[in-house]
Image 1 (cartoon, rainbow, N blue to C red):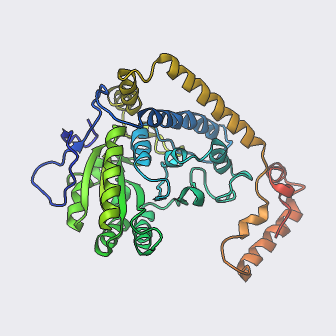
Image 2: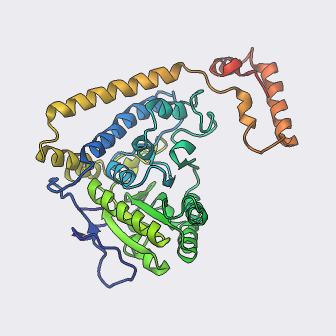
Image 3: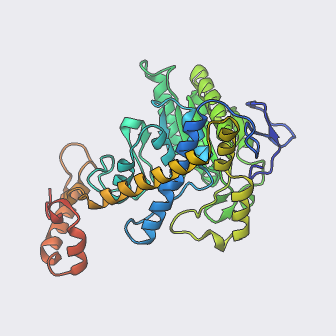
Length: 399
């Protein structure tokens, strides 16, 4: 069952009026993976690549090799299923668990490692962002920022810009991802209002994973989840079982079609469960029992659902599973080990790309202060010597 405990339905129905009934969650795959459709094998493989990456990068963070990490454990179907329902040129505004969208669009393992390690292959943010705060113009993936919900009104504006662009009007939409905790921010309501009034082809995709860091959903709102808010803004809405990748795929495909054809927004609430900790800064067993997490892994596992579906169609077997797991493990480890050997961008890049044109006086002042500190301490303070050796020019090339 989805974490909202709402009933389920196999009929995909978008609504824009409130009823006195609990909103059902659209489902294609049941717990035994009995029903499905195309893209299944690719979806499952990309879903399986996420935990392969998450396991390695979570562990290397614990070893102090990267500063921070967030996993997608338990939400693989919601992320990959939604990515599969979009066109690769649709604009995406992520929250922070949407690495799978980039993987679906061809973002390489080396690029993943480049961003998380902040090495010279981090072409998007040049090592200036926290790990998993991806950005890639080539993949139409807008750079992630940490503050919750800021991307929601931005997405409404991006969708409106697409509508006004003769070259892209009627061809593309914007997809914005956020959690149910972010939906408690004012930015959620501002974005929904802006998109509904102006007619922005934006799909609002809420990953309701049950917890806003340590706050369970039951303590976040009194109404029927996030989907019940859509009709108040006149927005077509659907709730989907977020652990059913094919249901998410179908819902996003239809939401995208409607948003582009009508130049109007759509709200999707994908009910799922965050199996992992919120981030490497969190211990979720402080606010939920370990037994609850283990039960979700066994009773409503999105990866297991997709595997059962594939096996039922004769598209998958144990040999294919083992080959995939071994291949991913080797590829992810090889990409990480390679990424560790690469230099970081010149330290002077800290001060570039902030303003267009000439660098303003206050950034020059900060740059000169850092340069003076480097000259004074970089050869005598051991921690600096060790860290600066990782940068191009040993960290001393200032712009």
